[in-house]
Image (cartoon, rainbow, N blue to C red):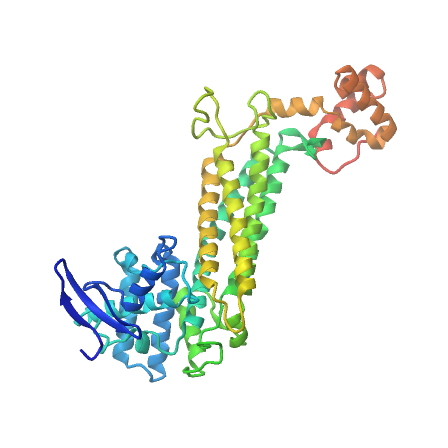
Length: 481
């Protein structure tokens, strides 16, 4: 046949043969992929995870292919019939993604700077379109993966652009998860606003505060990420489409790139723009590095919160035990009744993985040479995994831990009363040296600060009570004599 494809029957099944510059390649007759995908699948059996495992990635690819087909048709380079076939095929795949998911089979880790992924998408679109138009799969004389589906494009502008758009989708989801977590933390801060406890620095008793203040701090620590995610999405939505191979725009109409971005803005629901310098945008992966850094920052903040709540819940009898975490499963195969803080522990581990992903992205960014970074497949794999894991971890932390936390008010108050940290509130009245002597005496005699103050007759009972009330010690104020 003129398209270089023919069909043969083996002893076991029907196969079809497709040719490329390396020669003939046999693949299942009903396969929606083609020769390039088949060779890549054979060359890169690395992770066992195909690009179809990342639906947002394929969605972004398809939206870009639709936008490109429409732009090429409007510019007169692609017939309206072929453009319609491409757009309809993309819509079909998006609508019934589970039916086509396994067709996107090339391993996410691959050599070639993403060429295998781009060709996998091109071939699936072409074959789905051909089938819907009444032709056989592989009859590329009617619609070609390269000449038609990939018109005005190069892997070097389409692949990174697909990564960026998919990251925008994923970051929108991450923002929602963080917002929900912040709201849950604020609910707890209100619930615990009257629970007086001792604050600690370097794990040593410091000064009193409320448990509500502690949880407010957690919420305020996460809240700024909402705006930072918006900023990151804006950075990622600047694409090098129209730059083709190295950013010079070879084989591409100068109007095409902006037209594609306009089409994408309509399809994606957020502004998509063409980068000002396409050569720079093609070689630079800075937006991926900053995105990875943001994910690491989020992960570390979450890990710190989880470290705290694990420590605050330690016990239940021989630890701090100032809060109770929901019991979600038995904690030991040998110690009866033991319950572990498994949800915070899981979040800690996710955070450590995200830190590792960030190191991978950094090394890949450093490894880029001249006009293209060949390591974008590893970058996207690290970023997709990081966001996926963070999304799940945040949801689980919120639903299975934060919303069910209870305060151990008696233990919190007991710790305050037994701490010498409350003396800090008396410094304006008694002075540092006197307070130091009282603290030393209380510790040596095994008494509370209140007992020492009362026995020494240094202050009235009324002033002593003022000194230990949360309204005085857990908010900015001075205790007057």
